[in-house]
Amino acid sequence: MIWDGSTTLQVAFEDRSIAWSLLDISELNLPKTCAISFPNGKDDLMNFEVTIRPDEGYYLHGIFVFSFQVSPIYPHEAPKVKCKTKVYHPNIDLEGNVCLNILREDWKPVLNINTIIYGLFHLFTQPNYEDPLNHEAAAVLRDNPKMFESNVRRAMAGGYVGQTFFTRCM
Image: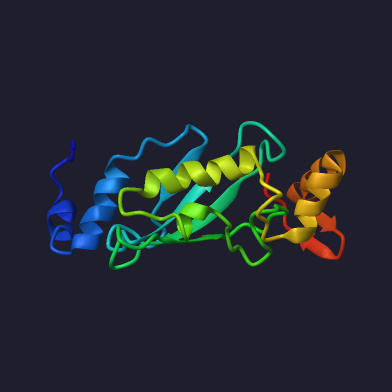
């Protein structure tokens, strides 16, 4: 691992979970459509945001922000991830909960933050109607993909899909 020698890393190694998180973050190999930021500054490396800008699929040109809260027992427990952007998606509910198996039952300590980010990115390129949190969106994707695409575009542009209003995210 290459590091710039800052004291942040040396202090972080006093706490094992911060050390793991820092190690993961320093070794990130993000797609060019993803970015990471630390809204609370360098003193809070256990909470950060990832922005995903899909470059293909239904969600092309969208901007989606996810919050990450890294557990004190990381990597033995997956980070808590929420979508801060209200999105019409079969695997993300309107409260921002994310259905991604590696965040729950399939989490293993050998997985890392990079794996989660790629999993989130994959949700936007290949939404899955077979394991939904938003059952209505999943049914539309399964039964009428053209209508699903229209609903996604309307939601991302800022508008209503059914009775639900979505703020512009493009």
